[in-house]
Image 1: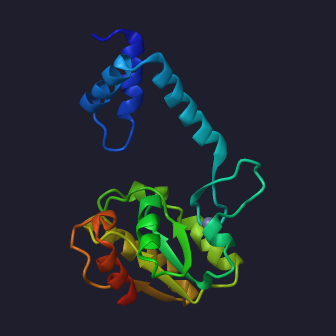
Image 2: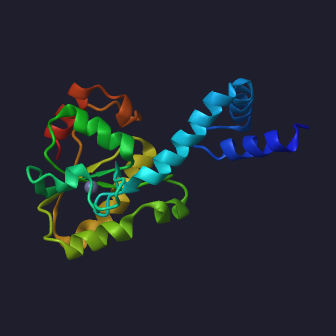
Image 3: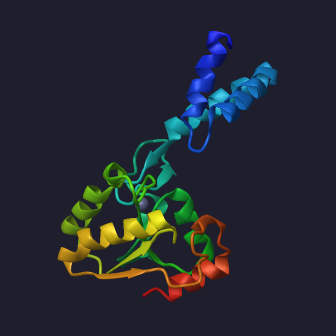
Length: 201
Ligand SMILES: [Zn+2]
């Protein structure tokens, strides 16, 4: 048995995405070897992030807003962005991947969370209600691009979203071919992702 304070940290790290108890234990023993100063730096960095970062009211992208004055992220606030197109992504990392292509000028919406095709409860973790509210409230967008990973779970999510969005009579597109099937968007190179965006259907 580990000492309780070590076990407590292992349990906390085990809650991280894709981190099992073994990796969690490795993190903790690494921390144990760190200098006092480095530990302080780490702890401060975590609380600083929590203090400074908030989620955009419109797309849920995290952004820094120290004075707590802004409700919208830099993308949603940018007057040059095309507000008639909304790109639905699974998470923050996918948004960044698409931004890096510099080929997309519309807005985003981060669905949040992963969805398993087999677990119906997972669908509740998506921000579906928030998305539908947004479509109802604002000027309805002309197009919604569903930019999800071409995995089995991604496909199940696309079908689910298409069903939810159907009553709104919007143009709904999805990424074109080219992304490796079963692959994750964040590993696709920029050119492939850009062409999948351009060839959306
Ligand atoms: Zn935003």
